[in-house]
Image (cartoon, rainbow, N blue to C red; front, side, top):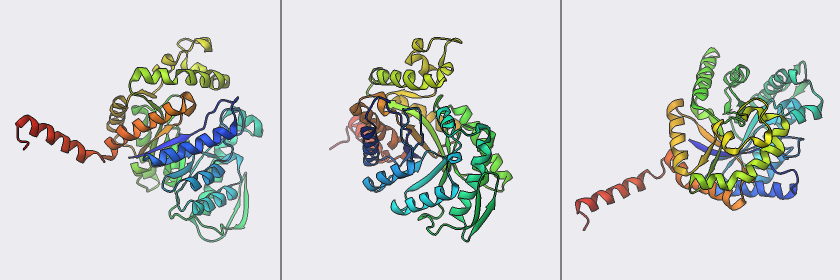
Length: 368
């Protein structure tokens, strides 16, 4: 299983954006240093809180500060971009990073971005499909491409810089809709699975993967679970109670300042029309599949998730950096890296067995 971060990012709109970008870059350096495998960075253009407009440029900066961790867009919103430029920039970035790039794509839908670009939201699925088809052809095929479509036209074009990686990894975000399942299965893509507003739940994930496998079979493909990532909020501290205390103020600030202004408070109401300022953190956590607790709680949850879904290719933690002080957020990631990751990569199996032998030998009186 692989482990990574999803840097949305979300930062208080009143803060210094330069410092926020630096903080996110430092976070990626730190994640690499403690053993995380990959990081995905989002794209937004409005709303004040999600402030990275060009994840490819951000990845370029992160690639210069790191050497091992894989760097993905999470996601490039295809209706906003020319498909040739997306393919060309990502192939170039793959060389600059020496083959550490993952192209994550999706249809987007943040209301303020849709308003900003003044596009017809009902056309987003068709725009995304057409753009993705072109991007995949440009990345995967040799020779010039000509295309006359509803939204884009290409005439005799080819990337002069092919990707460093072959095959070049492409991921697609999905909340389990039939459309996203079809796209993933048809094109043999990585799946970024989860609803960041509600978190992941085993039954929904299991059903989604079953549909992906069935749809892939229709296309004559066999999907590997290594291509599957669940995306969820995880925040850890030394005790569950301390975890709640550490992140409550920042959590409330983000939700009431941003999420609820987008109209998402109804998902967490105890009753219809509940005043947003009455919605508590504990109430929200009861209604989601997020993990806020200690490492043991996280290990139990992830083992149950693996067992009930039949196995995942990886877990991507949504970065909640502004929910807590920097040192607390780093401590959360350290706890995850120290105790959770080894349980699933099995890197601690030798030391655990050696300690068990020590205890048994001591009890049996066989130590010299």
